Image 1: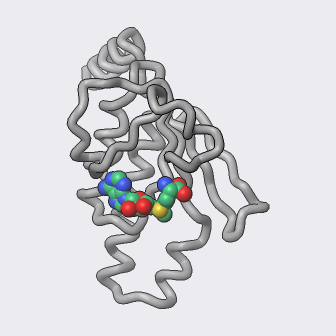
Image 2 (image 1 turned 120 degrees about the vertical axis):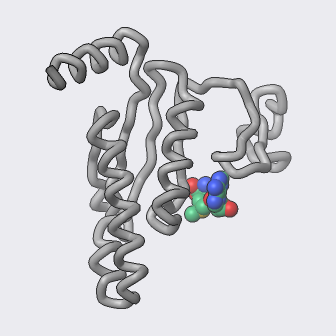
Length: 141
Ligand SMILES: C[S@@+](CC[C@H](N)C(=O)[O-])C[C@H]1O[C@@H](n2cnc3c(N)ncnc32)[C@H](O)[C@@H]1O
């Protein structure tokens, strides 16, 4: 950070956290989180822990943006063990569940090598959460 051309003169605006995101000890809440973590390399439990921590760290209405490379599962299926294929699929299920609940946008960047899918998830506001609970209660009747 000390040598970064845009950040060097702004130590009050930048804080480097030397911790895993899921172990980040803070009460701060953020409007925007941009994640470069390779989520499909983690275990399903780690991916779940990281995603839930991201959502906790957001203000209601705040957004999380992350990306995943396209075709990694297919490539892994060709090259890896069954256990590794199962792990990868299980992580994708975790991610799909978060996408179903919170995604507000998704686009594919074909110009990236390899192409990447960029997801935007939004932390619900209080009224939205209440409406969801009411909807779920109604559906359960
Ligand atoms: C693929 S690199 C991305 C680097 C950079 N953030 C970017 O987007 O270009 C992944 C980085 O995530 C870090 N990392 C791995 N597990 C992490 C975790 N649980 N919490 C926070 N960072 C983690 C690694 O140390 C590594 O620097």
